[in-house]
Amino acid sequence: MSIKILIDMNLSPDWVPVLAGHGWPAVHWSTVGDPHAADRMIMDWAVANGYIVFTHDLDFGTMLALTYAKGPSVLQVRAEDVFPDHLEGIVIAALRQHEADLSSGALVVIDESKSRVRILPILGGIACA
Image (cartoon, rainbow, N blue to C red; front, side, top):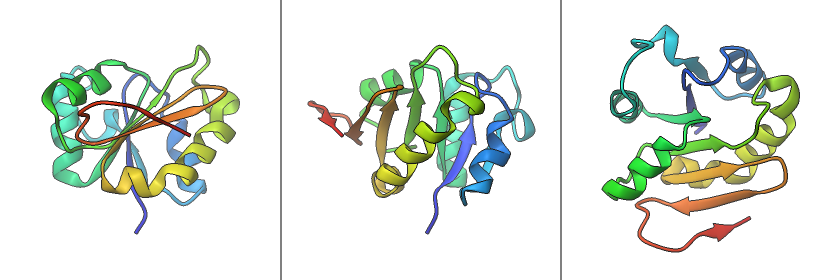
């Protein structure tokens, strides 16, 4: 079963066709929710609808850590240039590598050189990939 990806407002809607082209159903938050919604509302929507959250916002990982939540999974990109023409290969590789973890509950943080995974709920250490 493929994961479904909810793209946060801080990332371009251009990610939708990129992710779909690689086989992952994706929607941009602007098409399903209030663009000014609080992060908690986005997280709740993702859980209720079976999506992971793809974001550039550090607050999602913080919320997962502080609440010991088991979901939703979050794919967090940490880079200055977060457009698909720059990060597509890195994001797709991370999704392929960590899809099983994201399916079962994880925070995956990716940058231009590596990815790190924390299995949910976040209770301690970090596993590096």
